[in-house]
Image (cartoon, rainbow, N blue to C red; front, side, top):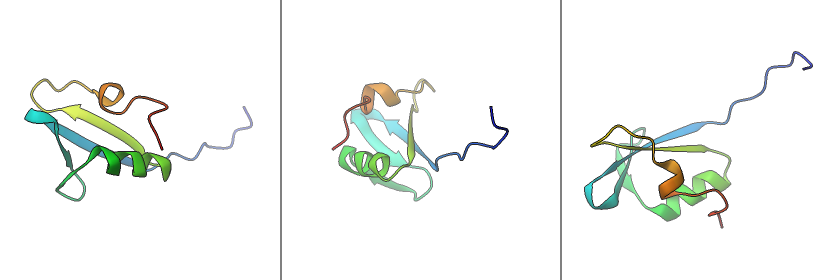
Length: 68
């Protein structure tokens, strides 16, 4: 390691509700899968949490390689 801190990507926390509704916590608005894909392509770390269980379900909602 070179001792240089690694730059963290900005994070978007998304809550998933019933009927797969996706809610962006920071903007307090509902968003689409397409918007999540846009954020990921812009360099954001997208994290999706299922409200009912508290489980993180990012890979189920937006699998790696699902961009573009």
